Figure 1 (cartoon, rainbow, N blue to C red):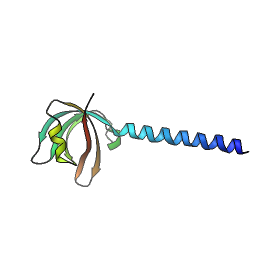
Figure 2: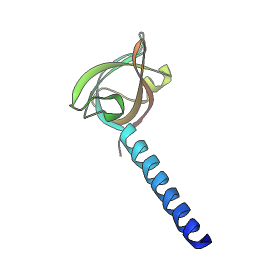
Figure 3: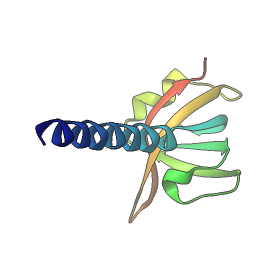
Figure 4: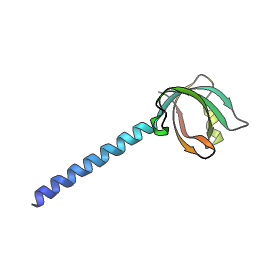
Length: 100
């Protein structure tokens, strides 16, 4: 009986870890910097599907940035990966780095 409980617990843990991994992978979005507006703290990104934001199709849109210092790390034309969240004021980039 204890062996069955152990197997069931291990299986549940494996499923939970796989779900977390898939959720994390869905949060990262690939894109390209099209415009930077440091004064307004905004960046225009052309990106692929952003399933974490409910966007199934590629598009180009303007995002606010959580930390304006992020804008100094990239330039127009850079390929990036980023994470964003939706708020009442619009979409905000929370993490961003140059693509490898």
